[in-house]
Length: 235
Length: 126
Image (cartoon, rainbow over all chains, first blue to last red):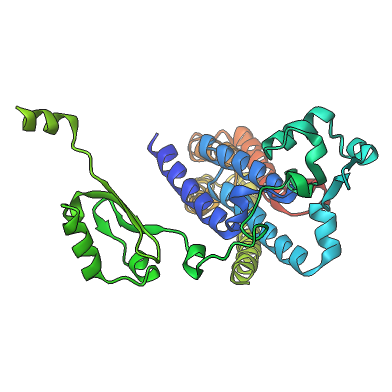
């Protein structure tokens, strides 16, 4: 049993390293080649963990080989467009200028239900709102809406914003701990933070979450007392 | 780009380790087969003391080599050699030369099989 435990730890560490080597892209959007690698790695890992008759290196070598080749293939596809087309395919337009390309749908083996489901996933319930719909190489549908169905933007209304409007709020205090990078991002000093926290009647360690933007517009969420402690305090 | 270099290094390392493993296996196979040939010759001659010595020597030689082989060869293949090797000294001591010769021949086949199944040739790959 201890052998299985140790093998699991080793394979787990190896897969974590392998996924890091494959990059963040792997986690969110799987290209066909990455999907293949993911399925194979999970199967090989299971085999290496379960079957004590297989030397551990018999699991490690295939996993490392697959991941390394995936990285090499990614590098090749990055450099050569033809290789990229061959391995990942190309995005396909299924709605062009508001007209459904039925031939393309057939070629992709995309049913009407599939298309409608993907459109609903993009928050579009009326197909007449769609100008272009493109099936990406990951299988995800990207939609460009007709002008009259698009969400109104500040640009459309000719609204002028402040430069700071483009900077979203960041976390300054997380679970009682001051995040220095957040302070730096907001161009604020530690003294300002302490003063603001004290003015609101808290200590830093009493704050569960504090966010702030570059205009020093902040939000404070205090730590909630545990139910038992609260009861004791009431008594 | 850093990832690509790491990947290329890993591929080079895997090829290196695999080649080293194959050469190690080839060396061990040659050694073991030479020992088994000596044992076969001794059985033919019928010199009891020499047969016992060679059988015991082979057993310890195998135990030593098996430690490293376990790291990259499927254990079932090694288990078969292990159990056959364990019988050799007793068969030699009790002078059951017919059975001993058969077991030596079996060991030769098993060791050949381990090597043959690791060589990257057309038959093994497909």
